[in-house]
Length: 238
Image (cartoon, rainbow, N blue to C red; front, side):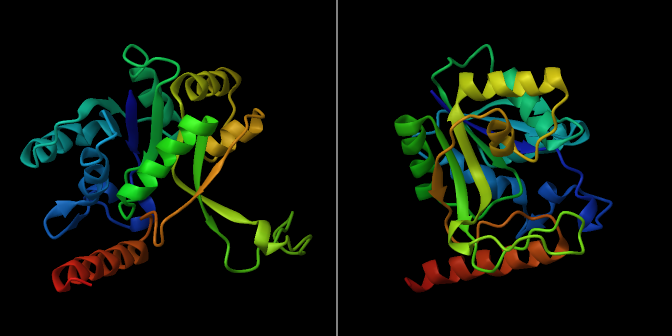
């Protein structure tokens, strides 16, 4: 079984929007999270979707899912205070229905500009290697500074990548590590970081272009421009 775990528990403080969390901001009358979910709903290899959502917005999400006739939603889970806790809650909710060798794709609810191919590549990589971390090659120099003033190193750019999503794993392996982190009070940036801390072997797949995470007003406007450009290309047959 292959499950998409979509976490959308953030409040979007950087968006400066008090009325709605960032994942419920709308484009053409539809919230961002639905654009994200549609990629997994429409993918032939995805069996189920688990969504981790802010408690106070679960009813709103259910209404949107019903309106757009989503069929693969297995569970809607209460979000945590951090992204890591939200992922933990989602993995825990899957415990009774997933086998250790099942595949789980962990993805941000506010990362809607993925495509069918990157989902397929993630699944194939996990089947082959056990893990798949979507990454993007760095195109500018990376600066390392220990104190935020003095530059300590400028790593070789050709070896640098930015972690994106999906981040995909065998269910048993990633659930065990998240449980261990919870017990030990370990806080990681994302699941790839958590796995690296515990010494798990991670394999990369290259992200599609423009796989942005919407965390600021600028990101939202970039998303709108890119989405509308894609729509226009399809209309014109480009």
